[in-house]
Structures are given as structure tokens and as C-alpha cells.
Image 1: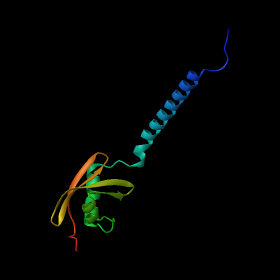
Image 2: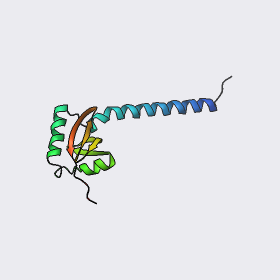
Image 3: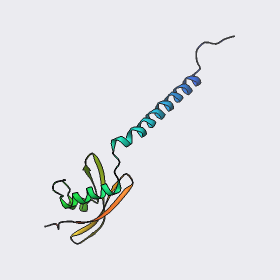
Image 4: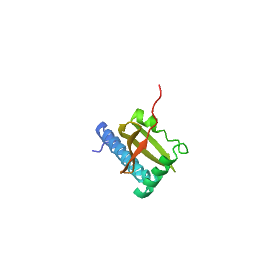
Length: 116
């Protein structure tokens, strides 16, 4: 005695296995391609890039007062996204942390005073 076709349970299990396989391939591909999207930067190079931005903020469109207001921001340099977080604000300056790829660099940044 032979049967023809698949049972509902077999169809559901086959669909679930197929979905897991597709999700696994997509996850593997995204983890492989992610590092190429953000080039790796050595800590010394990152520090010199940040120092250049702080010396010439208008050239790099860096607005320290906007980051001081919101507490967070980002900076795009040579295809690299650097996260900026306000740590402490005091008077005319603030400690800000610049982060990229697990590296964190803190700098004292001059922040212009707000005028009413």
C-alpha cells in the first residue's frame, strides 16, 4: 500500500526548514559583507581624524552645539561613520566620546554658548 502526496504536517515542516535555511544564508551574507561597508581604522588614525575635525569643524560640518543639545550625533569621514556622544557639559566646553568599531576616543570640545 502506497500513498500519494504529502500530509499537512510534512508541508509545514518542509516550509519551516526552508525558511530557516533562507534566514541562515541571509544572516551569513550580511555578516560577511558588513565589515566592507565600514572600513577598519586604527586607533591612531581615528584619533588624528577626530583632531583634524576639531581643529576645522566648519570644513567637516561638525556642529558641537547641536550634539551638546541632543546628546548624540554622528560624523561622516572618508566613508566612515563615527558616533559622537556627549559625556559631560561644563561652561564653554564638553567632553565628547567619538566611537567607531569598538574604539572610543574622548576629547574636550569647545562648545559655543547659546545666545537667547
